[in-house]
Image (cartoon, rainbow over all chains, first blue to last red; front, side):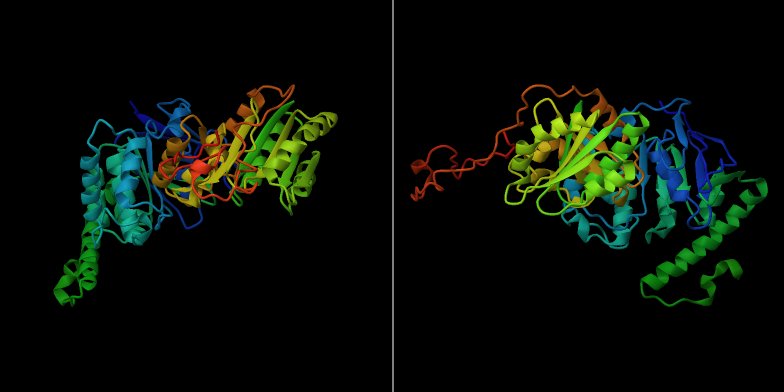
Length: 261
Length: 233
């Protein structure tokens, strides 16, 4: 049973040790990673996914339940406790979607569940996030950027179904982000979001702040921010509504911006 | 002395992987020597000699198949590396026609494949993968985790016993297990034998039998119904 993940600090690009030398993530935690572009956010989640042991350029170490994780976590996908949803918006895989998901379910060792059932759940999850539904017989390379990311999120949640989920800028996916958050949070896991999205940040228990390749601070969402979170969500819902209306070829009216009414 | 033979299609990052292996060997105070076998052009020997100050050589196979060339020169290369006082000889060779492998019995055979090359690649490269000991998968940062894992599954389907190690050859992440395998491998000694069966060189058609139909031939024959997956042995 995985109960915690610990990030042991390494060094930033300058070679100086990181200001924060230890971060503990407990089961059920939702954590954001924030910082300007190029500050090392993606590198941090890659370190976690690679289960870095002072063998990546940052020198960080990742502990699971306080110990160095066994190498089988990295070399046997069936035992890997981490799902990583990267920013990739296209697949290089020349397989049909069904075959790809079947193969992934097999190597993640989900043989106790019916493969057809799993695939159906993945597709129905993914299709709640995309505009145009994904066809199981399509080639992976034919999917749009949004469909690709929706499928990756659904695959990570249903097929990987791991206790630790890392998401890289899920808001850029051109998908129903709010719905994605709702669906994801139905599962008790450790979530790490690399994000620029105020809504996601304020829904997190705490945020890791990054600059120049280094972890510079850890900020817990305080009471004032928690209060603000409600307003931010409303604002965001309004913007999402406008986006949807425009997307479906509708006109906007003054009342659409209820928050300011 | 240890010997490791590194093969794989062009541009998969064989030399990048070897560069990190040599660096790690050096930090373990092991002396590496390097031989590059290529058809008509290579400069990895010069680069690696400059970068690490180790003995390196290259040979152009020219009209020979590089794997054929490997069989011819490997004995000499081992003597040369011994004379240089090396602990490990790393041979890098391009696999071209994919009908045989350059690996030697009881010597570590490493194939380098790239995660970006498409899911059918493991099924296409034949003995260079199926007769290897370790399949190193490079360019893992270019694909999603899901694709990386499905690529692993596709390799396992073809070569169930091969150890698969994903690496980032840009930063040298994941190289340690390769170095460990090399250092734990047996020392080379005695007569070496090529692993797997060589592909047919001279056949009944080459020697002038023009009759159509496998019934008229002998040696390596194949009927339309006989479509076994080619594993090189």
